[in-house]
Image (cartoon, rainbow, N blue to C red; front, side):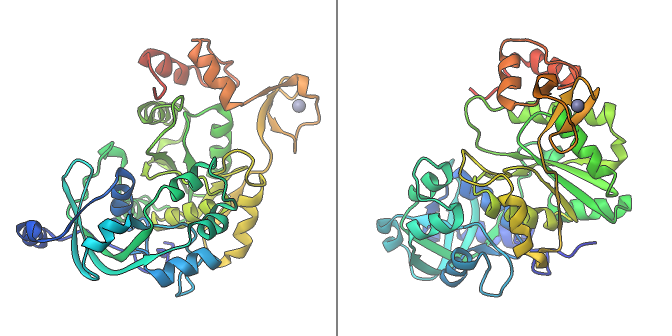
Amino acid sequence: MIAPHGGTLVNRIAPHADRRLILDNWHSLPKLTASRETVGDLRNIARGAFSPLEGFLGKDDFESMVERGRLTSGVAWTIPIILDVDEPTAELLPNEGEVALEGPDGIPEAVLHLNEKYTYDKEKTAQNVFATTERKHPGVDALLNRGSVLLGGAIDLLEDAMDPYPGYNRPPATTRALFEERGWKTVGAFQTRNVPHAGHEAMQKVILSLVDGLMIQPVIGKKKTGDFTDEMIIKSYDRIIESYFRSERVLLNILPTEMRYAGPREAIFHAIVRKNYGCTHMVVGRDHAGVGNYYHPEAAIEIFSDYPDIELQPVCIRGDFFYCHICGALGSERTCPHDEDNHISFSGTEIRAMIKENRRPPAQIMRPEVFDILAASGQPFVE
Ligand SMILES: [Zn+2]
């Protein structure tokens, strides 16, 4: 079994007895309301998905992450996992000590063991993490909207709520045990934000020819209007795994987190997280976690050569799949010699347009069962 990132799987979920003590003491602590995104980060830290982080980055680790994509210890870390507040809020907090973190709904979520308050250079952070400071990049925009003070310190989560989709939201300790039990020595991770089309299925089956097991891991979180709903993604994957895969070799398990659209740096982050879940391989496609034209399509593949110490093997599928009428099979510009006129592409935009108009995509592109699930739901898209 591949070791967790940094060596130890973090567990910052308060034991039951401590939880009572913390809650008894809750009203005496300074309080902070965490955003939905921050609550997501809290849960991922607590259940070890973000190992070796035990909390939100402190100043030295943050600056080292920005500067060289590694923590001060040298362990790879490429994405800011931070807790931000505005200046007036920061001034009300002590310099160190326990802080009560509540969700947007006022529910107690976690205790922060605050040990540092610090300011940071947003422009430089944006440039190094996202390779741009342009506000129209959604990741940059989110960063620029954050408060100007960061709080560093470990956290203790009160309870692992397991929501949403509890049956599909196994924490890393559970997937690791499951892989062990199933005898999977090598496990490929497939990240997705979409309902499956035939190109995805082809890639997943390539991976299954290389490794013992496959974890298909939809990223569940904030979505844009017009994206497929989380429910549609889970339902349609369930269906095609049942009908078209050796289901004992596949695990469908979500990752509730926000997309940052940091391209190559986010590909490394995704690899670290999948390694914590016990995966030894991960599919890295063209423009992984990219947006617009900010990253070279292969930048997310190339960055792995700077991080040989991650150990997880990126499986790089180069070229875009399409269906070729002359080959009578799926191919890519790396395999098929025929003209474009003979190809049906897997353009996500086109597939979504067809579904919106209730037109069934050709079976070479999408399994009829998937279309049926989407059509039956009436509203497969985020409104
Ligand atoms: Zn062809």
